[in-house]
Length: 103
Image (cartoon, rainbow, N blue to C red; front, side):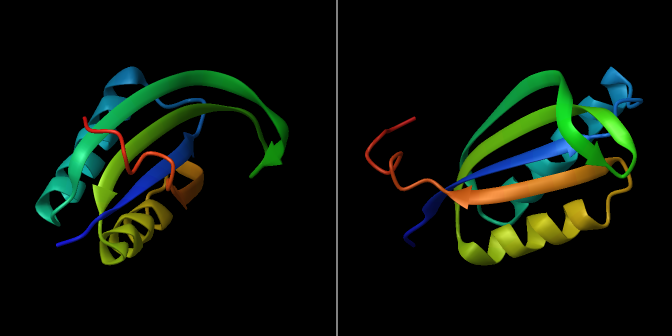
C-alpha cells in the first residue's frame, strides 16, 4: 500500500500538565499505529505565545507528529483531536518533500 507523508501540529491548552501531554501523545501515537501508520516521529515544540487569542488563550503547548499513512487515517486522527477537550487547534498537511527520505 502506498502511503503519503503527513505532518500534524496541534496546540494544547496552556494549563495542561506534562503527564497529560504525554498521555495524549501516546494516545495519538497508538491510534496512528493501530490504523496502519508508519514512521511516527513526535516533536514537542513547547509553550509558545499565540499571535491571537484562540478560545480566550494567549499561550499554547505545541506538539508536532510526522507519519506516513493513508488519507483515511488522517480523518480518524483529526476526528479524535476535534473531540479532545485539551486541544484548542490542530492542522494536518501533506509533506511531499519528505517522500524521498527514509527514516
